Each structure stands twice: as structure tokens, then as C-alpha cells.
Length: 505
Image (tube, rainbow, N blue to C red):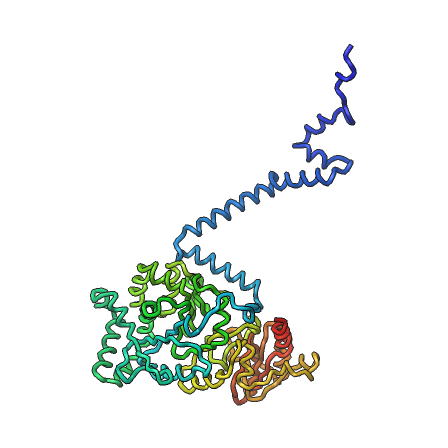
């Protein structure tokens, strides 16, 4: 007789094994039972489904394709259109996520302390046709100016007694166009129309034909300007090889030093940084030259020392490239240095009174202004910002130009602030068309103001034209200037909301 312990023991349903076989696995079976499985069993089943089920297979396929895409992009040349397109769209997405940045680093202890006098060199780009601007640029420097190292580059060389004047210190003007042509040699430039124009222009200067030289400078200045960028940076690096930062500015660009210094102190100069006001499409995103260009020691050494072939290619392309700032960006990309657009909103392509104060930069510092081509305009900027000793925010421009900020008036209630604030014979919208929405047939200024308020964050300022009954609704606001026949105002409610965010930091 078989011992009872030798008999198979069946616990529960004797057909359990058959039932289990009808499912793909034990977990699926347990999930089908009337009795609830334990949390541990549920988790095991869920993890198995995620790993081996349809979603798991899709996830694995996407992970594989993503890895393949990233690896493929890394292997592509720096200037490959696929790589540039991917980078462009990633930057757009990041900007969307951070549409109202607040630079906490602005008042934080410096991560990389910088001395503007010893750690930087300012490269002032001028030309024969704009030579009167060079002295105005130096005259506009504030009494608290910290810069000590300058290099003036142009399409001509100054003669003794004709140097740029930095408060009594003569600064020679270097002809970097000749340097570009010398690097190419005579064979590369004999049949080039741009070179022929420059040689005719240079001859007029050399022979003392000032009037002819001025006329040629006006007609060919933009073409010749493209020949200055790369050679100008080469010359700066040869004369100042150990600086942390290289600042390339036009002779009509104003630098706000109290805003510049904390930015540089926030960044590691050994990292290849290329900073400026981003323009251009995805194929070449470049820093607008007029708004100012900043290059770190890391970027300069990558370009000048590590990629001589890219530099030589740039010299050849300068014979046909329209914009020198775009040429510089393309050359840097070939060296693996891309424009860092995280800081693009800190640079302005307009003069101070026309600087476009958008919601996404209201609390941000402003580093440069552009468009100060007339010496008196540069002098005016110098006087206006002479006493600025702390970082200047975009919204602070109102204070510099003596404009009251109506949204700061403590006596205004929220309801009063929601009503249009009007300034007669003024323009705070800055033009019409393009990004500025235009509504025809608006009978009253107050009605135009209400339309701005109704748009919320999409309208920062409005201007009503009395004669045409046209209402301009702008996504930015400017300090503006007097314009007869217009009534204008800022969106005070929106401005107060934005400023409250600034005050938190």
C-alpha cells in the first residue's frame, strides 16, 4: 500500500494546471481570477506587460531609434543641415518652456570672478566711411569705465595724429582688410570684384582723394565690412592671447558694463561660449554684429588655434559673403562652436529709446544698444547711462530716460490700472505692421487701449493715430519719443504683473 505522503497533494481546484495552460503565463491567469491578486503579483504582471507587451516593444523600438538618431547626429559634421535643424528646434522648445526667464545669477556671488580691465579686450570695428564714430564711442564711456584693453579695426590704417582718442590716449586703427587679402595671396583675389572695389577705395585714400574715398566707402562699405571679422579676431588674439573674453562691437554699439560684468562672471571662459542677439534661420544662427558679439577664451582658441583650415576657408568666403557676422558664425560652427541662445535676449539691436521691451525679458538685464550712428546719439547714450552702477534691466530704461512708470503708482487700484493709460503725442508701440497688429477704423484712443488690454500678454503697448483712426497693438513696449498726432500707452496691468515677478528676486 502506498504511503499517504506519497500521494500527490492537490490544493484548491484540481484543474488548476489546465486552466493556467489556457493563458500565456501565470500572471495573466491570476489577473483573471475572482479572488484579487496580491499587490506584489499585480506589480509583477504590470512590469512584465510593460517589458514584453506591445507597449514595451514600442518603447524598445523608440529607444533604439532615439539612440541611433543621437549617435548619427554626433557623427555628422558640425555644419550638417540635419544637425543644425535638430539644434534649432531644441532651442525653440527650450525657449517655449522658459518664456519668462529670471536671471537669478545676476545678483548671485560670481562663479567665475572677472575683472573687465584685465580679463577682457574690446574690439571696436569701424571704417573709413564711419571714422567720426570711433572717437564718439570712446567719449561715451562712463566715468566708471573699467575697460583697459582696446583694439580698433577698420578698412584703413590711421596715420600719425589720426588715431582714435581714448581720453587722451591715442589708439592706432588697424587695417585688417589688408591682412585678409595678404593671407589669401594675389592669385585668389585678382579676378574678384569686391577686391577690385577695395583696391580702388584704398588707392583713393593713399593718394589723398578724400571725397572719392568717402563716396566709395558709402557704396562699398557693407561689402568690405565682411572682410574685417575673421582677421580682426586673429589680430586681437595675437595681441591679447590670454584674455578671458573678447568683445566685438560696432562703432555705433553701446556696452552697459554693470550688466555685462555679472554675465561674464557667471560663465566659465574656458568653455567655448559664443554669445549675442540670435538672428538667421536654422542653417546658420548667428549673433547680430550690431548688437555686439562675445567670445570666450575657449571659443577663440578653438577657432584660431585648433581650426586653421576653417579660418582660411572663412577668408576665401569673405570675398563673396554679404554679412560678416554670418560668416563668423559659420566659421565657428565648423570649429564646433555654436551660438548659445540662452542669453540672446540680453542684447538689443535698437537704440535705448527704441529698445523693444517684451514680456520674456522684462526682468532681464540689458547689455548692449545699437543704432547710435550719429555722434550726438552716442554722446546722449553715454550721458544717460553715465551714472548707472548696477545691472540695468530692460524695464529700467524708463527710469534712465526720466519716464515715470505708471504701473508703479501706488494710488492706482487694480480696476484703475485696467483702464488705458494715455500719453498724448507719443508712441510706445514702435511702428505698425509685422508683429504689430493693426486695427483700422478705431474712433477713440480709449477704445484702442481697451483692445490692447483685452489681448492680455499679447499686447504690451498700444498707439492710436488720430488722423487715420488706426490702432497699433504691439507685443513689446518702448520708451518711445514724441510724435505729433498720436496717443499711446503701455499695458499697465501686464507691466505690474511682470514687475512683481522681478521683485521676488
